[in-house]
Amino acid sequence: MKMQAINVTDFFGADFASGDTNVSPSRSPNPENMIRSAPGKIRKRTGYFHVADYSGRINGHYDLDGVDIIHAGKNLYADGKQISTVFADSFSSGVYFNGALYLLDGQEYWCIKKETDGTVSVKPVSDNPYIPKVVINKNPDGTGGYAYQDVNLLSNKWTESFYVSEINKAATVFQLTMKELDNTPVTVRLLQEDGTYKDLTEGTDFTVDRPNGTVTFTKAPGKSPAEGHDSVEITASKNMDEQRTKITKCDIMITYGEYGSGARLFVSGSPKYKNRDFWSGLNDPTYFSDLSYSILGEDDSRIVGYSIVGSRIAAHKSGNNGSVYVREGAIISERDELNNRVDTFAFRTGNVITGRGAIAPKSFIATDNEPLFLTANGVFALTPSDVTGERYFQSRSFYINPRLLAEPNLQDAYACVYKDFYFLAVNGHCYLLDLLQRRYERSEPYSNFQYECFWLTNIPARMVWVKDGSLFFGTSDGKVCQFYNDVSVSESYNDSVDGIEKKPIYCCWETPGIDGGAFFINKNFKFFSVRLSSALATSARGLFSSRGKWYEFLNDSNSARFFSWAHINWGKWSWSSDQSPKVISRRLNIRNADSARFRLENGELNEPFGIEDLAIEFTAFDKYKG
Image (cartoon, rainbow, N blue to C red):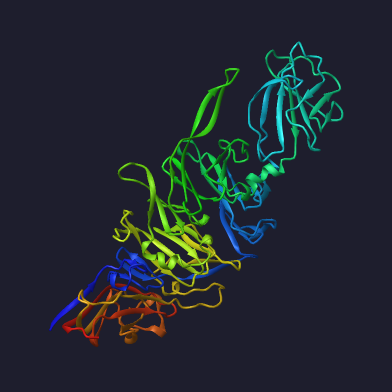
């Protein structure tokens, strides 16, 4: 009988997809709460501690010039102070734009701004929207004129300007474009000879016939004092509540602009217009033209989210086909009837890619490598083809898909990027894609590579975010927690969601069945050795499984510890000052087995745990007979 050895020096991640007999010894079919410490090495995840409590589930987190904005339940908080109680109790989306936070909650479109006195204001954008000048150079009777700007979906108001010539200088009645005006006072400005404007007052200088949309002056404004220049500006108002819901009922947003800039705000998700998206004016998120929208495919599937791919924007739709509409914005310059230059933002014709339908609006993340998003078939990337330059879908989560896709309510999965991990939280579990470690997987031949993956448990995250280099999460009962950053201290290895009870973190790394490449040969497993990362306080428990039963063979709480005057722990004393990784070995007596599985675990409070290397020795002899 010849002694053989299995040496594992690289630990890549989880593999829930390959089946026990196909899992590489470098991956685990059952890891829990283990992540990469360095490429090829693994350790227990750090714990988290309680930061704050809010009234209602955590629906959003944003930064406003250093002010922490939390959306919890129906409330909005600025640095812990409640500033609004009328938000929708659902996930919100927000972007920082031109010194303010613009936020959609599926109910209203909000502007949150830090005022000069340090207070934070919260107002619907429709309270102070851009007021467009829709027509210029009109005749008083409403004829003629040129379209100048589009109606703003966010504003009840609009302005029209009239040119009073010698022919119609006696006119007192001016016809507006729209009728059925609301009760908002109409305002009028008259051009003066010195180039200034004079403000007139409704009820004194003019009257308004609101049903017919006419303004009647008590005295004719007279001929324009400047030849060729409009002399009468009228600003009127009409109820646009129904039109405004095209924007206010949206729940997703992203910044994008011509030639890849972030100069416009794109929004979508309004239930009545789920296959449409709308974009704002250039550098003005308070102006959404009634003509600035796209209809993307059929209305039986909604736009779920966006990816930015180079200089293009990709809108991802739901459904079995999951079409992605890849477009590129550009400014098109034309000349109007007066030879004035008119610049219009439009989309150049792009690709429509049929692939995997997106399912989770909060899973869209632009990593340094590529945009990632969650579909009913796992986490996918939108990536350029090496051959044609066209963009198409590639799977990136092969190794964790069986467990990930079995999760309920995947539409609520929430993602962020933290320290080179795509961090996806759902149902108290976190699925991590390691952006530093890629592998080609023959079971996914149409994808260039897969990311190595990890699986974390007992993390009650409804949403996750990164602030100042730290990872935070919010829970469904209004708590905010932060993960420890210092991996070198024992106090980083406990979980406390309430700030009172500190719970140990259980972690394990399990090998697939070890058969030495010859499943039909009988084996006697003789020896097991592991090199653990040293720590002030750490321990390891080892178990093996043979013929379906688990047996303990290792329980070591001393060998990998070292002593430090700065961090004395009297309950976990060690005389060793050697901080290098420690080898722990045990003899085995597993006889007449075709294979064996091994598990290393740690579930002690305030104990780190890291694995550097692993080795198993066995002898092989007769054919296995069961």
